[in-house]
Image (cartoon, rainbow, N blue to C red; front, side):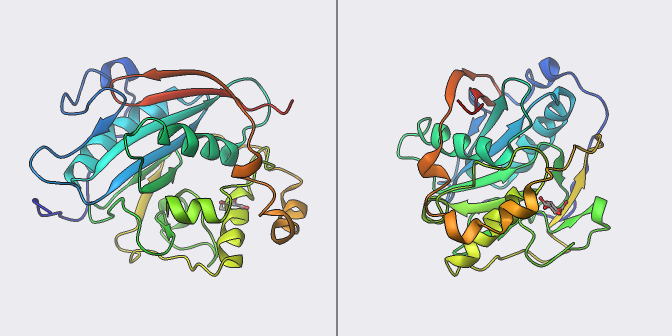
Length: 263
Ligand code: BGC
């Protein structure tokens, strides 16, 4: 590590134009990739962000994340995975797509994957975006939850897994359409394979959430969760189907556009 990382970082949540943000941060290479010029990075990290209809959030997110990540001197890339069409949002399936597609964009592949909501911004520079030996739940202390952990098994918001961990649990389930449950399903997959969830101290794992309307909860999420242990080895990354519509290398991110509707 070449620089000293201090704690709290400021957040700018004022309206920003995506096109304008895209003209900033000349140090970032095309596709939203960065590696520190004067050190050899210890971590190769893909940040995977599921996306639809949140252009304003995306501008604020990129404007916050690039300076935040550059200071951590990791080798990283930001991948925005956009779901086309009007079907219910499927966050987990977009993560699976992001995992596979981001791997094709890096010579030698990534070691670590951070699965990240676009509306969460880290508030402490010591929250290092890397993957330890166990899966890490990064967003443990979110302002919306009074900076408290809502429940012990929670794995939503922002979470980190190595390539090996993600592959062993067969990725996320593809079956969660609409809000909720898919992160609990991943938490269960990890538990069944005897992983345990790590977290930074609550004074470090702090995030602020951008405002948005609450999405409609998926009424099937509880019943789906009853079946995780029976089906996770057969359903997930191994059964993922999608149509890759386009990949665009923008300055601050790689834009992966997909159709994930069931055929
Ligand atoms: C949902 C999760 C969500 C958590 C916190 C749970 O009820 O199943 O998907 O992350 O609440 O909002």
